[in-house]
Length: 233
Image (cartoon, rainbow, N blue to C red):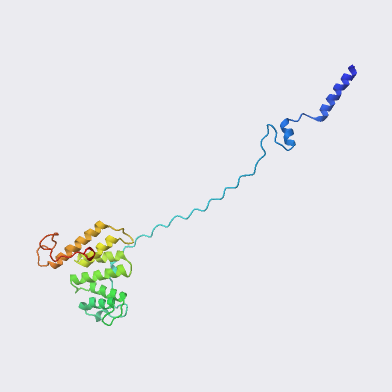
C-alpha cells in the first residue's frame, strides 16, 4: 500500500512537470481567440487622420498712398495745343471762347474735351484775365475733371480756387461734392451746408458790388438779388 502511494505521488509530480506552469484564466481565454475575464478589449479601427488645414489666405495688400493732385499738372499749358494750334494764334480775350467751341462742338470746331481743357488752362494762366473770367475758367476746368476724368480730387482743388475768387458755380459744385461724397470722402451734409452758404454769400457780393455790405446776413435788406444753389431751389 505504501509503495502504491509513493508511485502515485511520483506520477502526479512527473505529470505536473511535463505540463509546465499553470496557464492564467485570462491567457486561456485570449489563446482561444476570445476576450479574457480580466483582459483588455481588442483594439478597434484607428480614427481617421485629421485633414490638413487649408492654407491661410495672404494678408491684404495695404492701400496705395493717396496721390494728391498737382496744381502744376492741372494748370500747365504749353505753347502748342494738343491739336497743334499755336497758343499765340488766339487772342487772350478769346481763349475762353476757344475752349467753349471745343466743349460744345460749335463754331465749326469738333467736340474735343482735351483741346477744350488746354484752352481753359491758357485762359486761367494768361495774365490779362480778370478775376471773374479766371474764376469761370477754373470752374469749367474743374467740371471737366469731375465728369470726364472722374477725378474729384483735382476738381475740388480747382473749384476751391475758383470759389476763393468768388465763383458762385464753383461753390455750389463744392457743396454738391460734399453732399454726395466721392471716392475718398464720405457724404458730409454739414460741410455741404457750409459751401452752399458761401455760394449764397458770393452771389450776394456779386450782385451788390456797389453796396458796402458785400457779405450780408440772410434776411438783411441787401439780399434781394442773392441766389441759392440750383440743388436747393
